[in-house]
Image 1 (spheres, protein in one colour):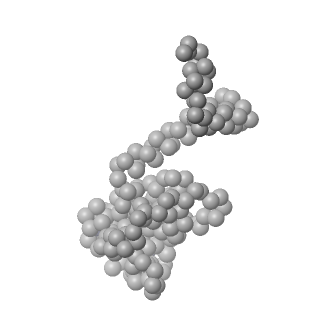
Image 2 (tube, rainbow, N blue to C red; image 1 turned 45 degrees about the horizontal axis):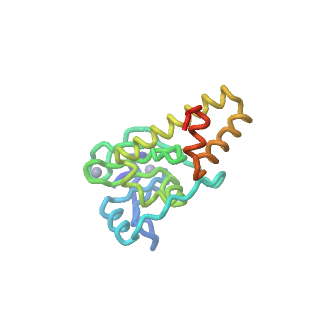
Image 3 (cartoon, rainbow, N blue to C red; image 1 turned 30 degrees about the vertical axis):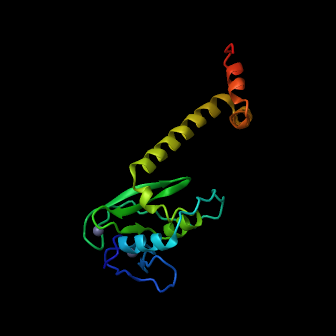
Length: 181
Ligand SMILES: [Zn+2]
Ligand SMILES: [Zn+2]
């Protein structure tokens, strides 16, 4: 099987005990996981691990390949989807055979964040919808921050968090909006 990025290099099995079984390209460092290997591993792997919080500065470098890629197993076009959750790269999957392509270090980063057992969800519309919402929220917050200034915005965010976690938040919200209880 040829690498979908390099196109001339061949993929070979990664010699490791660690599952799922992976095929790698020595030229670009990419990884291919066959659908049945992923599902077999996921079944043995058990319950989904909770996603870990973002760790600043520990991320391995990624060169997210943007070109259209063909499935090394069945030749169909791979679907490219954003990972989201603070990670700014995409992964590719074949909609026909279900195999998944990771550019160099992408699998390792997903593993660091415990997102490697969510790969099948990343391609769902619910997951992609959440990413769009996350981005809209970020854009909205940026706009408010620009209007208020960084200092006041930080204070306001703390205040909001404090209210949202408060057992009497409904009374507080009513008071803030001038409602007569
Ligand atoms: Zn390659
Ligand atoms: Zn395929």
